[in-house]
Length: 399
Image (cartoon, rainbow, N blue to C red; front, top):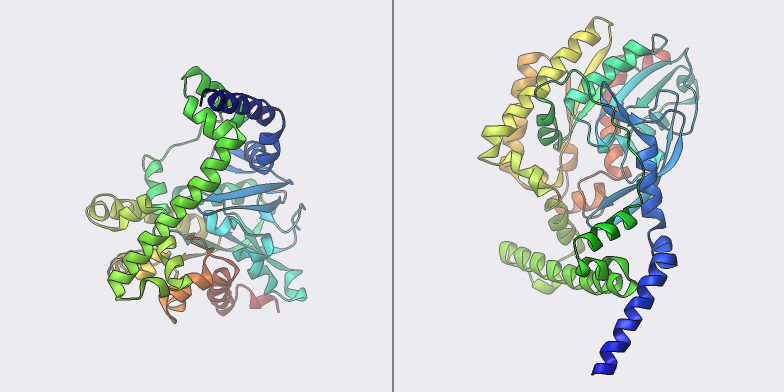
């Protein structure tokens, strides 16, 4: 037994040394690259918190509980996500689409994003004169939408905009509360890249956290945590969700389909944000945040009206409110009341996702086990937006 313990300790020491010198750099190469790129290319902005660096190309990573998706981001001379690194044409007319990670297109290549699909709908002759722009960035919210749109238009006198399309997201209800005191500006703090692996190691040694060193800084520990431990955790969660579904819908435990399981995973993502739509937080914070969002929409509408630019606000579902009729109706009723009171153009894109079985719809239109749309989900949104803008002569005027 003593010899075995000694052998295991020697093995761990050798593992630790080689992990620090070689293995971890290889294992975490993409993660470290994405982290460096976030520091380098997602730059702070005094007026609207942060944006993309202009005329850049880099690999980004969308991390969520069940996947890490690497995707390419290119930006134009306005610092907006684009199909390639380029300067925009000054003679074109533009429609600016803005939102958070849904519009940025987290985890998606440009051609699969909402704006990428919208531009694909334009024939060659129209595209020479008109184009959609993607001003979305992850974690934006209505206060930031307003500030960024105003900045883009005021700072670029050559930019000819005929419409602005805002995608108002569920997460905005939580995110927008951070700006309810209407900050005049955001501090520009110098950000420096520090290797997260080395920083974590130093902190663990400093705090004598040897359990963390073992599970995060050696290949044996990482295998135990990310392969064995994660597999067991996923198995337990799978059993838990199967039991919930079997009990709730009187189904056979072993015959529950992948669509139903996917729905359970998707509807349990970002549960801390979902709480804003249930009492007591709905009455205390949810409505308060929506009211503040509409203050920003009204201010932006006034700014745009002076420049004869149309404003449209798009509302779309998350998996959890596709599944919950009461929450969906309560949320949409409150929004419709606000839209009516303030005479704001709006597109409610819900029925299109409720035409088929909810589990099948979630499986079909969202990233696996997530709340963000895939290409098919973005296509549904693009159809409604394109039709509405065309009907109001904001696209077809150029044909």
